[in-house]
Image (tube, rainbow, N blue to C red; front, side, top):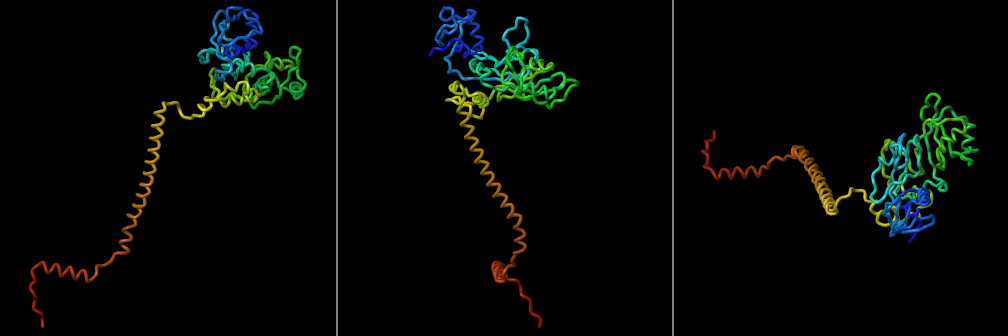
Length: 348
């Protein structure tokens, strides 16, 4: 099956579709020795080069999707290489054999917080596209308190950004303590244009001094993920995110819900050889049976101890005196086995 080059390269994690389209336009991509142009198609068996480097590709829809959460600190940029030598978010991420991470959106250098990354450029493009309507939630600190009229402007009327209206879905006062003339708010927006949040606040007379993304769709930034650290997105979390924008059908063969990967994800125990697992199960069964025997023995022992403790009481209460007949017989048997005792004359 032949796919458009930008889709094929985006799937391989080379970048977003829009970014790869600029590569093709600039003449950086060749297919089987010929310079590519927009609209060209290819497949994994073609010899595709970017900047003279051959690309190792897989068929679209075959490779399993992986995703990460990264807690971006201020001062890091979202490009792979920086001519100025500044740190990038990719410096702190693990490698992927035969692929690379693609960020879902590119916050500016002064913005911190949550960044989603995936090995599937096509999915990244879908998740960041405004048509999906995914919510992005930010913590924002601005200079001066926003009046209700200002909040209404930001959420209802909207402000002009590059000739296009922009507005927040919600603006709420944050529970974080105010710092002098600075005030904290939580804002929710459904698109991610360049420095859009900062420019919207500037348009109503409030300068943003701190900006942190805390949620992207259904994925939240938790306290366990420290700044500069990353964490894997659980399979069910990823499926929930993809399903929330209705594109799960396009990636059905690459999510954990399809085929063997899902069954593997259900295994809750650590990965160990099958033989060891079986022996452990048998030994655990033996341990459980031995515990059962021990419990029954313990109960029996406890019952026995109860009898032992109560036996002296019963003996004392039910002690029988020896019968006269039996004592008489014992006296006779004892006298028959011994010499007759001398008799004493009776006194008259």
